[in-house]
Image (cartoon, rainbow, N blue to C red; front, side, top):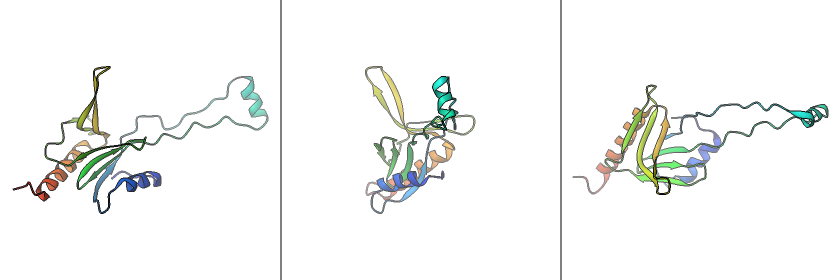
Length: 152
């Protein structure tokens, strides 16, 4: 399980349903730079430094989407607070993309933009150990099916 900040833990617990069992939580691998240096420029910047004012630091990194796997659903909690969720069922994984380093995507479906005619994958994207995540989702879907009245 990834290490979550206190804010991320609060975001996760806010969307869990009563007595919902959390099996896994993750977040995408970061591809953004970790720090930005702000360089003062020009006459005004020199005045600010001279009078004790410093340039504002770069804003903190934006919140990242969070991925949750519970005993009943797979959830992507977007940075906007919006949820993308899928009930656990057999065959729910449409595709798995695995990179050489073991990271990758577990894709559940796609958004289609008619205007640009592009498909955008939705699911657990850019996770560190994609094979492990795929196995967790598959096992949870199997367990959900076996616990349902439709299993024989």
